[in-house]
Image (cartoon, rainbow, N blue to C red):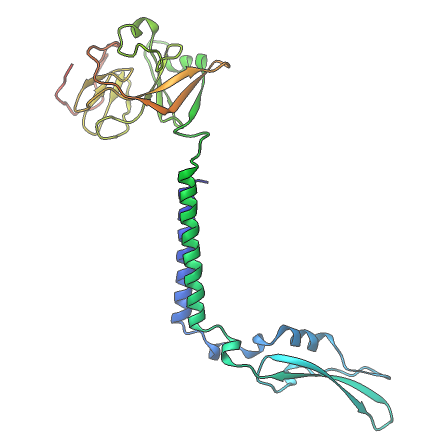
Length: 297
């Protein structure tokens, strides 16, 4: 569970506690609304229920707590020796109740508000501490911003290249990237000659349009990327073709692991200017968007 989710849960819990406190205050729960019997000292109730009056000859039935005419709630146990008329001796245990003040019996509104305020402040500081910890020690394994395993190279190529020769990119949600083929023969004509964004004939293109950040969908008919927000167009490997976008689609650094898998380093994004010439033909068919921007080659 992420820090953001924990923060929302904590904020919701604090809000719920606040609502409960407000309801309690508004409803006017106070000494007059509480049954005094429920506030008896637990020791007194336990002693009253568990201990019986005893004599040398037969046990006697103890008085129930309702029969004791007292106000409240603390108790002291005392013993009294009583001599019966028949000469027997009986030892009785009596519970003596003492009155306590209203402040001792109930939590006052001032005390309740003080505790509620303290709890709210403590929860707020806890959320802030979690946020700062998440900022200072970010998640370094898995997810966007780390190295993502996109799968085996051969499986990706079989998925991407269709029987008729057309291409449908493999979308990797965890990397927010499209994986597409880029043949080594055309790499020499591309501005990407260092090889860091090409691994075994595959490239990983960031899904975000470089104009205003919309997600750019794939157009199967034109074999390229076409942004529905403002009409920017890119060829199969993300090279700029038309529209208001200032540059090519961004790419990720990719490499092949020892197990033959494509590793996308989403923590390293490569930006590049508009290509002077397209290394892959575009468009190869009808456009998917009706918007017709001013095209620039």
